[in-house]
Amino acid sequence: MSGRSSASRRTVLRGAALTPVAGLALTACSNNGEATNGLPTEPVELGAESEVPKGGATLYRDQNMVVSRAEDGSLKAFSTICTHAGCPINKLEGTTLTCPCHGSQFDATTGKVLHTPATVPLNEMSVKVKGGTIVAGPAV
Image 1: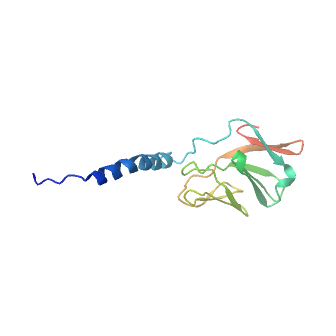
Image 2: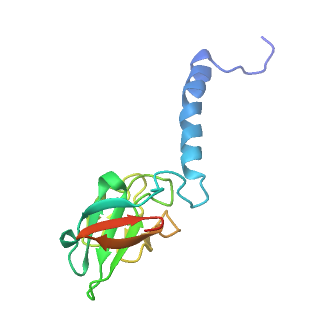
């Protein structure tokens, strides 16, 4: 034997098996704080205006959107694609959105980050009511 150590077959195979996973993890987190997919490209009908209470918010999971209503009745809409790693947010408690991937939290009334690892607020969408139905998207 030459004195130099060589990797065992098990070590090489383990490393090869983990490499794609590590690459995916780095890819998912390397979006520089910008969500790159899952954002609507056209206006989306979300639901009845009456679904969003004053001072509250309603999560529309299938459309990756949240709509909040201020005490004065005005509406705001945000994409619920997390700005940290692009995961769809699926949990709303009160007006706090929580991302299932890394635990980032956002205020559904402002889009602001409440808890890291996200550092960039949620993307705000235009929102209006047409015939009693909430419509939100990039330019409604």
